[in-house]
Image 1 (cartoon, one colour):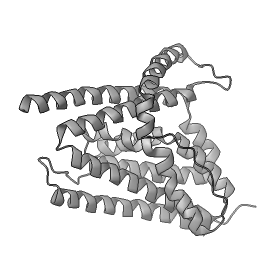
Image 2 (cartoon, rainbow, N blue to C red):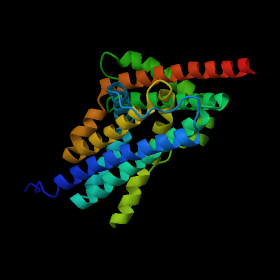
Image 3 (tube, helix red, strand yellow):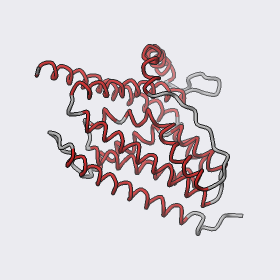
Length: 283
């Protein structure tokens, strides 16, 4: 028997859009507050351009594989439209809070060039780790690379493994790899708190990976794209968790997504070098 369209689908979907719009409102307020309090040499312009939104949307959906898998399990564990509302609102609030927190750090440190350089280097290392993790989805069940890009992916993984292993002792202390466990409590409040924590526990490295992009895109539009990506992913997960997880784990998407992370990381290292040079040159 199919569940009724109202309220089982209409109400959660409508609230997803409402939370998305509220997130944009909070972001708009944060941008104006940062411009007023910090007031750096470059003010954040709260404008929306489709290219900035598209970049934020694409980056979010590429980094949300673990999130999609976990939330898919969570929706199966806690069925029903009321539980679904708690999961949607909680994860959306967690995603909004994490993105806004990274924006605050970036806006504070970008005026201190050597600190900004350190943040960009750390974010670049995070992106390299994410690139290696993304290549896992190019493998088959036996752990072998598949498709015409398999040999290239294998060589890239070897290089990334050596690099990530070298920096792991430092990076793991800054952004620890934490496994999240589902809370078996069935209360709506407990489920909401669990949902809020999910983006932080699964996405700390994702948030950090945004930092290099903040220097090349309009952060207001980029963050809006991130919020939009979260909303669309939540909607897709509710409509069909299995198909959504299969889509985000697509080998071709994962391969080129990993390449994109490597390129962004390399650009970040170059940008950090320029910042360090300009810092010492100006002194």
